[in-house]
Amino acid sequence: MKDLISVHGVHFRYDEESDWTLNNVSLSVYPGEWLAIVGHNGSGKSTLAKLLNGLLIPEKGEVVVEGYNSRDENSIWEIRRRVGIVFQNPDNQFVGTSVMDDVAFGLENNGIEREEMIRRIKASIQKVKMENFLDQEPHHLSGGQKQRVAIAGILALKPSIVILDEATSMLDPMGRKEVLETMRELNKQEGITVISITHDLEEAAKADRVLVMKAGKVHAEGTPEDIFKQSGMLLDIGLDLPFAVKLQHQMNKQGLHLSSLHLTQEEMVDDLWTLRSKT
Amino acid sequence: MDITIKNLEHRYQPNTPFERVALDGINLSIRSGSFVSIIGHTGSGKSTLVQHLNGLLKPISGSIQIGEKVIRSSEKAKQLKELRRRVGIVFQYPEHQLFEETIEKDIIFGPMNFGVSEEEAKKKAREVIKLVGLPEDYLNRSPFDLSGGQMRRVAIAGVLAMEPRVIVLDEPTAGLDPRGKVEIMNLFYQLHSAKGLTTILVTHSMEDAALYSDEIIVMDQGKVFHKGTPVEVFKDPVQLRGLGLDVPETVEFVLKLEEKFGKRLPRDVFTVEEAANVAVSLIRKEGEE
Image (cartoon, rainbow over all chains, first blue to last red; front, side):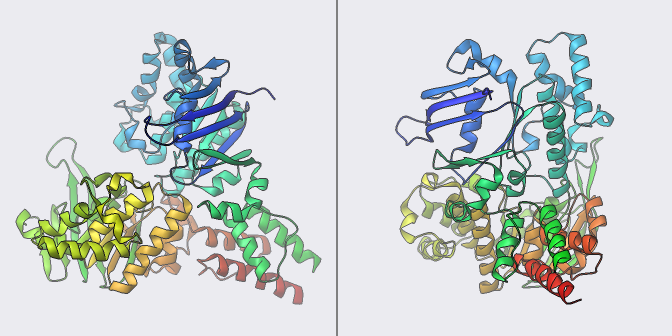
């Protein structure tokens, strides 16, 4: 498959005296996929996100987004329009005085003409199901709703890629579900590529592909099944396992063995049901 | 220290067109030495409530009693000093509040502000740095050379150095990786047990609330919706989801088993081991039938 983003031999550090924050990182992002990036605190995940949309430029190596190289100054705006980031704190990224204003902000900055702007605002607010809140002020919105408005602001610019940089970590359980469901629909129906930087392993288990970062390097890469099989490796580098995997290990200890590794509760319950019919 | 809250009300921007009720008719009692979690959707009033516990916010009406000390709206800031020493708050991202050039200076800042001698405060610093799991020789280092998780431990050491009797944790694990989360929660639980602290945890993690709490307070729209043991609070998933909350993953698993097998199962299941026990004994029993 053709790469949507190619990262090749990227080195980055915040100042010349310090160690590399990213040390020779290479990876590809493919069109339409949901890529989860996991790693311990300080492994370089968020720095990588900022390199992917040209907020940071590599010291060595290259980041190429749909043919645009972030080292090329003329390409930067093309890259930023194609790659949107939703950050962690919903209150720090709401700039408008109403939902509609907030979504308009990015479009105004990009000099989109008024009629087109109104069309895009309506369409993108609909996609995140916030059409009943058009004139609401931010303090009347929940954390999950604010994050969905942030997503709408990105959608209005017609991006190819949305990066969630721990975008659900400050939300309550339902807010987290809302945001993830919204993104899953956009991923499936609009073909938007999602890169999710997360500590939530339940979420990573549902990705198409998982990338594990450790101390500024890509440590492992594969399907969720490939990655979560390697429980020793994950625990060693400060991560954890999805609940269903931990549960399965515990059942094994108690002498109950299931047919294969399950990453979700649903699969596990189904397998237990099959096991019951056999006994 | 027992905590008793009576008819507490709080409004933001009172007497302006932007006035907004944040807390409304809160009545609560928290037993000395207990571990209590507060859960609720964003904006339900959790953080506003805990900021009243050490006088950062004063009630518009109603009262808060902590030990012998009663806070009412008429309270002068000066009279709250002793309270601030007794009730330590660990805010979200506490590492953002570090500012001194060495870890030692950062830790002794609080106690010295409360009139403890420098020598005494330094002694305290050596004690608390070990409590949070960092080596004593870190004291002369700059806090800004540490990793995020370690910086958070230093910030927590600063709160512990004041010898609080009540400790309020406002989403203390936000942003930490999975190992960091477990380590910090274990640290708080150990301190809670070893020092007989009253601990109040504000959290979005239903798992942590279930695992550590004697009691859970459920907030909704500035009111206390429910208060009870983890078993009581997590027995009604539909109601919790309606409030923007959920049940812990262990309970969710049991509920899925119940649905699939059409059987009533124990729901007081809050650890992976307990969840595995439920599944294993279910399968074995089905085999015997």
